[in-house]
Amino acid sequence: MQKRKPFKQPPKKFQPKGLSILYEDWDILVVDKASGLLTVSNDWVREQTAYYLLNDYVRKGNSKSRNRIFIVHRLDRDTSGLLVFAKSEEAKHFLQEEWQGFQKKYYAVVHGSLPEKDGLITSYLAENSAHKMYSVVDPRKGKLAKTKYCVLKESSNYSLLEIDLLTGRKNQIRVHLADKGCSVVGDKKYGAREKGIKRLCLHSASLSLVHPFSKEKMIFESKIPNYFGTLVKQQAT
Image (tube, rainbow, N blue to C red):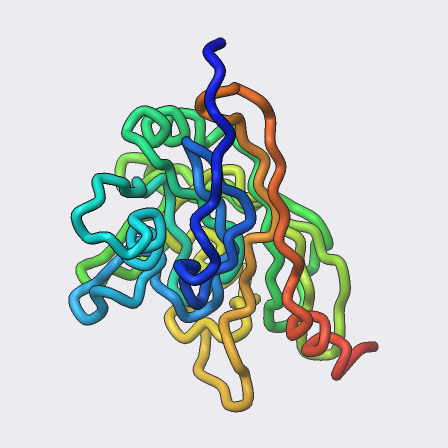
């Protein structure tokens, strides 16, 4: 394998707000995204996104720079945690082709308690005209989605779950848990609006991938937000 010169990270003054850079080299950029920050732009927000901010970061503020990043996957705006970008088309294609085989672990606080303390939720997910996902039985009408979960802690109102994302469909975890009658706390789209909740309680905490250039196995981790534990402890049984 050809050798590369050591990678030098841009000065801290270019590091974007709302994102913590956990790892960077010539091929990939791994960040810890804050809840409330979009991965990419939508009809209303153009610049305050992870994609825009990190493009500016790798260009070191020089708009004429050819440096750029490429989208590998996305996190919902209000989901926090690990987000990976590629720094070349080649790296992007490799990561996307291998993505389903990488291990992805999430944590969530949900309403109520699940009868089975560990299990596998499987359905086919489809999207309606309002861009809302829903489960269907017919495989011809949706894409296969599998979510494995384990209950770590319970209180009178909430449960803390560890989740293995076996497929990566849009809003998958949120839809599957809502299907079980235990929507993610703070989920206004698939759950109920409620007072006093600060954020969507879903966090991407661990990601194991194969590096696109070295083919080395790499594991990245993001600490579970303290708020999750605080919510469950408030009404611990």
